[in-house]
Image 1 (cartoon, rainbow, N blue to C red):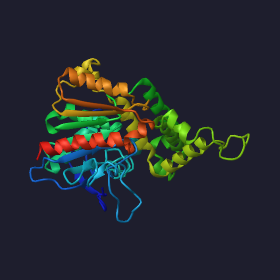
Image 2: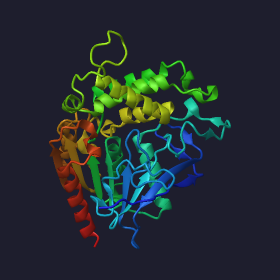
Image 3: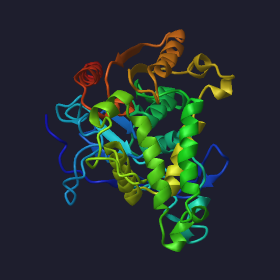
Image 4: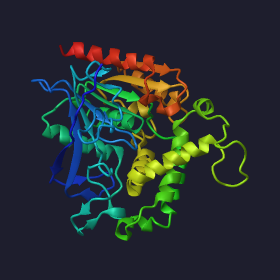
Length: 375
C-alpha cells in the first residue's frame, strides 16, 4: 500500500446565492476541495468523503511544502488501501463555515468589507450537502459510486441519501447517528459556552480586536476530546499516572491525563476558529431528518435508493452502536439493502480514524464489491 503522495487543494467559487435552511443566504462563496485518483470516462467511480468536526478537505496524501501534514483519513484512502484510488476517484470537500479554506466566518463579507465574524449564518448538515451537490455538478458528476463519512461526516452521508437519493449508489455511515442525544447536545453547549464566555471572544468579532479566544477554545477541545475516547482507552493510556513523582497540592497539572488534555487544547486553539466551532457544533445539534416526520425515522428514510454500509464501535459512547442500529432498523423497514457491522474495539469514538484490521477489511471488501459492480 502507498500514499496518494503529493496533493494540492483546489477551489471553486459560486456566484449563485445559496439559500440556507434558516432562510438566510450566502451571496457568493468558495468551496475548497481535493481529489485523488482518476475519474473514469463514464464519471461513475466518484466517491465523496464528508468530514467530521475538526477535519477538512485534506483527506489523504501530503502537501509539497508540508510533508508532515498528512490527510486525516490517509490510512483509509490511497492506492491499495480500503478505498483504493486505483479504482475510485475520491473527493474531499471543506464545508461552508469552516476555517480551512471554504468561505467561513474568517472571510470577508462582501456586504460589509469586513470579516463575517458573528454575522456568518448558522448552517446545517443539509446546507453542506446542498453545497456539495453544486460542486458535484461543476465536476460533471451526476451520481456518486458512494458517499462516505464518519461521525458528523456520517450524518452528511445519510443526508445525501434522503436529499439526493438518485445521486448515490452506496451510502457509507461510520460511527454516526440520525440525531444527537440530549447528553451530546449538552456537551456541545458546554463547549460553546466556554468559547462565548471567553473575554477575548467579543461576541464573535474578535478578529477586529486582533485576539483569539484561546482559553475558551482550549476548554471546548478538552471537553470534546474526553467524549472521543473510551474509559478503557484512557485507563490504558494514562490511568492515574502522575506527571511528577508526587502530588503537587495545587491546581496545576498533576496527572498525565491532565497534561494530555491541555496539550490537545493548546494545539487546537492555535489552528481552529472559534466561530467555526460554534457553527459546526450547532449543525450537529440540529441534524434530525426524522423531525419533519414526527420523529419517524423509517418514514424519513423512505425515499432512499442507495445500498448502505453502517459501522459502529462497541466502546463509542458518544455515537453508540444503538444509534446505528436505529438507522439499520429504519432502512430494513424500507426494504433497503444494508450491511451492518459492530466492531468490538477499545478506542471509543476515535476508532473510526484508526486501523482496526476488522474495520479496515470490512471497508475494503465493501468497496471491492462496488468496484466489481461498475467493472
